[in-house]
Image 1 (cartoon, helix red, strand yellow):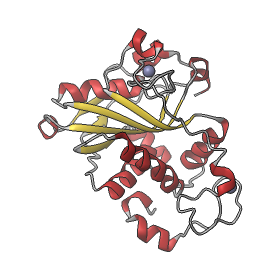
Image 2 (spheres, helix red, strand yellow):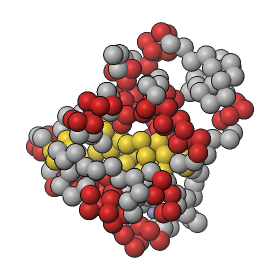
Image 3 (cartoon, rainbow, N blue to C red):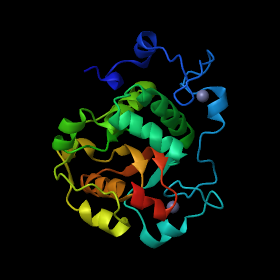
Image 4 (cartoon, helix red, strand yellow):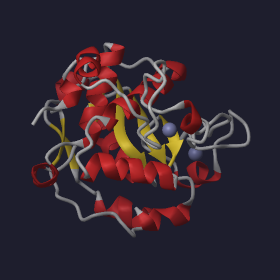
Length: 247
Ligand SMILES: [Zn+2]
Ligand SMILES: [Zn+2]
């Protein structure tokens, strides 16, 4: 199986040039390099500022820390997501993860890299949220690793894929509230070579930011390994606590 994220984007665009819009399937205008036509792009649920300065979800002012972050706190330093986890985005992610449409990683990665550039974050390395080896075997690829590869190619920031590992094959989090999610992930992640991470600022990459339990769990072990700051970039964020039950 070709792993698209491991190939240069230019090569991929040559082999599989985006011809049709990933959502409405209209023929693309030449300038729609990200794979979404001008009709659909306006309807995509981008998260716009002002955002919470911790979790990156919409807030009343840019400097405000949202109620959830004030109540629960996070182990990561700052997070941003491109899209609200709407029905459209949910369907696209489902096609990407379960229907083998790996090339969607280019569209997703494109918008994530644009947001990374706007963020002003200075990071030394990119690390994808890992899958447990059993899950990797059954799915065939790590959806976060492909996004991390794309970001690495586009930004020139190295991607460290095998430093953070998921050593516990955790139960699916679907239907869990934030407390059960945190509990389910206790001890799930570990670092293989901690000395490689000392004093580094790390960009953690995942597809969806739900309660933040996964990013927090990864961030704890990264900080224990001497990482300075952990920034979290995801394609989508769940904005309402009640939606956690569906994911
Ligand atoms: Zn379209
Ligand atoms: Zn927040």
